Every structure is written in C-alpha cells, then in structure tokens.
Image (cartoon, rainbow, N blue to C red):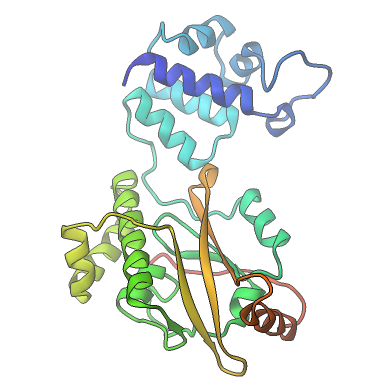
Length: 284
C-alpha cells in the first residue's frame, strides 16, 4: 500500500475522534477531533512526526501503528485496517467478541424489534428479549449452537422457514462473511475449526465455499413459527458495527400488516425488555 493511504486513514481517525473519548478536555476548539500535538502526546511521538505520517512522507513501524491505534482507542476493525495499510499483520489474529457501546446502544434503543449482535465468525454475542420471544432458537448443547452459519447449514431450526430464493440469498451472505472473516483472522483456531466442520458436515456449505455465489441481497425474509402465536413473516436487515467488527441484525414486519400486529403481541407477552450476552466461540 502507498504511504499516503495510511496517512489519510490516520488523519481521518484523528479528526473523527472526540477528545473526551481519549480522556482529553473538550474546551473551545477550532478544528474537529484531536490536534496533531494531542495525538503525538498520547502516542509518544512528536507532532511533526504525526504530520509526516499523515502526509505520506514517513513509513511507520509496527510499533508506531500499535501506538497510534492505542492512542485513538480504535476498534478491532480499524486497528486491522491500519495494520494492513502499513503492510503489517495485526498483533492478535483473534475474532473480537466484546459487545461495545455502539452495539449496546442499538440493543437498548430498539427493545421492541427482534435483534441480535454477531461477531465476524457469525457467533451470536448478544440478543434482546424481543428476539428470544420469537421462540425459534432452541438450544441443542452443540458447541456451535449460537453460530448462525452452523445452525443454518448443519442444525436448522424447526421454527424458521424461508423460500428457496430467500434461503439462497441468506446462504450466500453467510459464506461470504465467513470467507471474509477467515482472511482477516487467519490465526483464529476456533474460526478455522468451524469452517472445517461446516465443510465436513454440510455438502451445501462445502460447494458454496469452493465456488462462492455472488451476494445478490443483504436482506432476506423468513417465517418464524411461534409456538403460541403461529407464523409471523419478518425481514432481516443487517447493520455493520465496524469499530468492533460486529454486525447487528434487525427483524421487522411490514408496517400496518398482520405480521406487525402479531409481532407486537409476541413482544408484549414477553414482558420487560432484556438484553442478554450469549454465545460460544466453538469447542473448549
């Protein structure tokens, strides 16, 4: 990668970082984000060196990249992006699973909308009560029982039905996300084990892994068969949370539809809104 790409990324992060996020007073400021002097002080380098980096006139060492990422308190995805632009491997190749403040705000804001947050390996890490109220995610005791790809290809839900077209789109997204995750986290043993197990257990997954299908749509529809309320058709929409390399999936019904009314009844019957941290990252 050319030096100016790394420099542009650092400048964008610096200007987009609120002073209070890194423990600095806000005060009266003429510019957005942090000053070069402030980033230099936090990262242990001069403001002139920060300027040379941003202008593409100096190539950083791996230690400098790590220092800048720590100073700006970047999320995992941004840290790995800085490493890649500078030509280094990230120091830790594990899939991050921490539910950051951005993900929590989404879960807290949309308590009446079924929603879950998953990591890059497609493991659910947090869900809200509205999602659990759908009643379809029964637990099996399998090491990957909270993994979306595993449940879709190897252990499908009885209470989750899709048309052939929606299932095709859904499968393409799952395989594409896992392929992307393995490229970003080649040292994650649990992710590698998951992919190996999926390829061994599911002929369909193995075929798609060897010959990926283009992702035609990032939304798909499904009927959730509630044990008491019957079928409710919902559309899943995925939202990226790039700073933590997480994704949130929201399930919504068509406004004013019978499905929307049925969903409201299901969520109301579930009681007080809750947020649960869940999931496992594979065996062990």
